[in-house]
Amino acid sequence: MPAAEDVARAALVARTALVARTALVDALTASGRIRSPAVEDAFRSVPRHLFLPEATVDTAYADDAIAVQRVEGVATSSASQPSMVAIMLEQLDLRPGMRVLEIGAGTGWNAALMARIVGPTGAVTTVDIDPHLVDSAGRHLAAAGVTDVRLRSGDGVLGVPDGAPYDRIVLTVGSDDVWPAWVEQLVPGGRLLLPLAVRGTQLSTAFDLGPDGVLRSHSVRSCGFIRLRGLGAVDEGAVEVPGVGSLLVPSDGPAVEADAVAAVLADPRGPSGPPVSLGRADLWDGFGLWLALTEPGAGRMLPSTDAPALVLVGAAGLASVVPGPDARVHVFGAEGADLARRLDGALRAWTAAGSPGGPDWRVAVVRAGSGDPPEGVRVVRTAHHHLLLDLVR
Ligand SMILES: C[S@@+](CC[C@H](N)C(=O)[O-])C[C@H]1O[C@@H](n2cnc3c(N)ncnc32)[C@H](O)[C@@H]1O
Image (cartoon, rainbow, N blue to C red):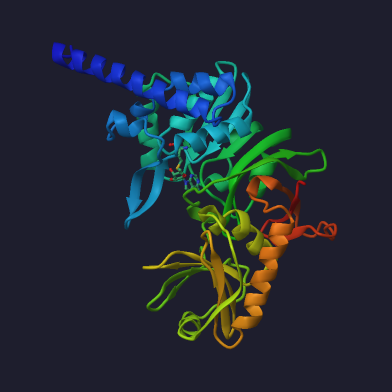
């Protein structure tokens, strides 16, 4: 029998949590992150703090991602940011009775939200690569009274065949590729939603599976997730430049030598071209995404002391631009002027196209070797597929 003080304390926590949860859901609804009654009901019903037993109630209901596991200081699991979870649940468009597979169980919170939406006639399976996390997700779900989520441990790039086919498959962990098992385990017309890393930019992309086996995006949103471990883990292409910091270049870009970049950066040749206005988001999305899709040598410089920059890298030169209201392209090294002209040209082309960002792109996922893409379509080759990107408008 719990002591009377324990009962009173639990009742107080539940009341405080309800107030905090209500405030969070009101804010997510007012900001348009939550749009549908089903997602709103799930957010109001599922107590997030029970999935974060180490966190205070205030922390559990702040609109922040909360790391729940770290390896050498790097987060390997987190409860995702509530506003991002809401955006993705709206993209997923769950209905009662649907069968769902989640890859990245983490705390179990998102699985509980989805179980609430699909209801007793639906089925939620969630898989995590880390058996310890699967155990703790099971405890959290039990504490929240959610008994109908199937938990599995394993590498989610292989899906979970024993519950297939699914109406919806959702990854809550970033991937560079669309793994064949996800397509195979989806019903015709089903939806796959994942944080897809496209040459360094993560896009939460909801794809519908067509009768021809092609996945076509229904909606695209900006996001930033922990990356897959296991079979789907990829080297994120960070080159440590001595005395400067990290240079991130897509794995399909030109080979970059750290010492050569350091030497080029020690040879500044001044600014070039007129000032432009770029926002902080343009590092990854907006112009950063455009540059990554149009220039093979595009990258991001993350200096340890200065502001991050978008760069174009060549063998003996570099051009960079630090996003800001009066951003200038800067030239480094003997071949920097040519790269600066290219960077300037990309800026003009992006502006002329209406400064598109992630949601303005559409993506199709086709099997490698499916023929030439139409004119103007950008192609990103992954191990399993080709991603075809063009602008919606
Ligand atoms: C951002 S967290 C997921 C958050 C979770 N959906 C929640 O509601 O708390 C990402 C999770 O993906 C898991 N993960 C990483 N690689 C994986 C893989 N190959 N297969 C399955 N899960 C993986 C991590 O262990 C981590 O728990």
